[in-house]
Each structure stands twice: as structure tokens, then as C-alpha cells.
Image (cartoon, rainbow, N blue to C red; front, side, top):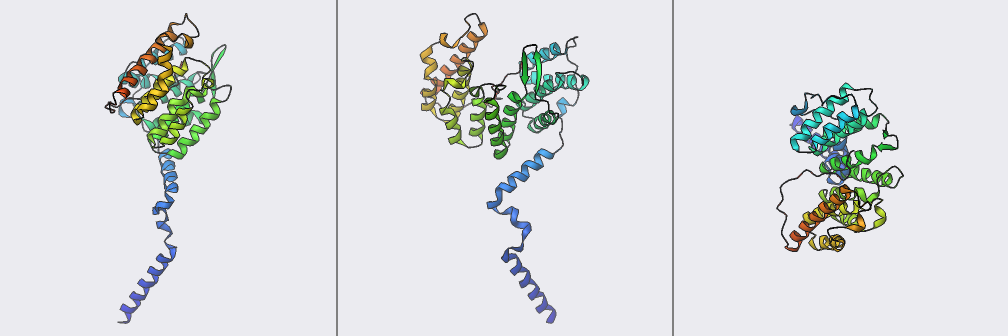
Length: 314
């Protein structure tokens, strides 16, 4: 009897301690402390060892040439042709990274490899590769005598995509803030260049109002140091607005391109540039198609696509 009474008293004592808030181990399960959990989740994710997918475990020698830049550009051109081309490109770029450790362009090529990994949705591996580059402290490389390439033009966009897809919104917003600062610097691309990347990140993380705020700024010509970039930004934003179901806004934000017409003379600063002409016409046709879908009120019935970031590596 005494033993039973003792056990009862012990049970009541433990219960009172738990009710008084002494159960520290349960605090992390409190929905109100979710922000701490998210942070912990990110730290665990970021600390994991990098694991190469089976298809990329074996390096593949690139087309060999006396010039490292030529080898890289040969790989990059073929990698852009298809999904399988990107996989082959990753294996060939990995070969260049591992076999040319003293090459000045090595870290830049490693960044290109990381960006292909991100497009292939190997998010964690791409994240680890970018972080390894950042840890070197190297932020730019000389591409030609008169041109330097700044890594931040490329790694911020990839990190924003990676973090947004994995739901790490605090880290994503920190990267967006860093990208805004970089875009305003003399070394960064103009702010309009990055708008689709930022809008897409806000959209897929459910921050629709923030996405629409960025879209509202899209028409400001001062955001584009190269006028033609406003066309590609508009085409990218149109695709996101369609997926958001914002058909009226899509028509409103793209009307300026229709007004300029297929020739787009005001936005082709170099009449001799076939690249600028092709870029305008391609963007114009895309905008036309998005507008037709929006005008018909057709709901999104699109197969999954691999988003192409706005920044293109040379």
C-alpha cells in the first residue's frame, strides 16, 4: 500500500513539473517556435556532405585543346542543347576543375558546373559547390584584357533558386537583399536583369504580394543599362504572371512590347547586331503567345520545365 502511494505521489510531482513548463525538450515542437525549427533544418541541410549523383560520379574528359578557355566554351555550348547535354557538361566541367588546379579560370568554370547542377535540380550539391568557391575569397576573374567576370552575378541567382525551392525563406530573402546590393554596384548587372529570378522565388515560396511588388517596378527603364534586357525580363515575367493566374496584369505589363512591334527598333541599339534582333523577336513571340493564352483565360496546363536563369555565362 505504501509503495503504491509513493508511486502515485511521484507521478503527480512529475506531472506538475511538466505543466509548469519544465519540459524543455518539448519546446522545439511548439508551432510558435517554428522559425527556430526552420533555421535548424537549414543548418542540418547545409552541413550535410555533398553527394554526387550516380550519373556524374565518373568524370568525362572534355574536348582537349591548348587553350583552357576554348575547352570551357566548347563544353558550355554543347551543354545548353538539352537535359542530357547538361549532364554531359557537368561531367566534362568536373574534369576541367579537377585536372587544371592552377588555371586562373578554374573557379569560374566550377561556378558554371554548379549552375548546371542547379538547373538539373541537384540543389544540395550545387549549394556546396558554390559555398566552396565563396570560401576561396575569389570574387572575379579576368576574362579578356578589358573585361572582368564577377561571380556574384551568377552565384546569387543560383542560391536564390536553390533556397526558394527548398523552402528556406529567411536565407532566400537574405540572398535577394545581397543581390539587390550587388546589382546597385558598379560591378553588378543592372537590377532589371535579375527581376525574373527574384519574382519566381517569391512566387514559389507563396509570397505573392512581394512578387507583385517587384513586378510593378518592371517598367522602370532606369533598371536596365542595356535596353534590350527589358524585353527578356518582360518575357520571363509574363510566364510567371500566367502561372499565377494574373491574366489582366500579364496583358497590362506586356502591352509596351506590342506597341513597339515585331521590329522593336527603339530597343535594338545596334542595327547591325543580329543577336539583338533575334533576342527582341524571340521575346516578342513569347509575349504574343502568353498574351493569347491569357486572353483566352486558359488555365496553366504546362509540363514541368527547367527554369533558365536570367544571367548567362559567357
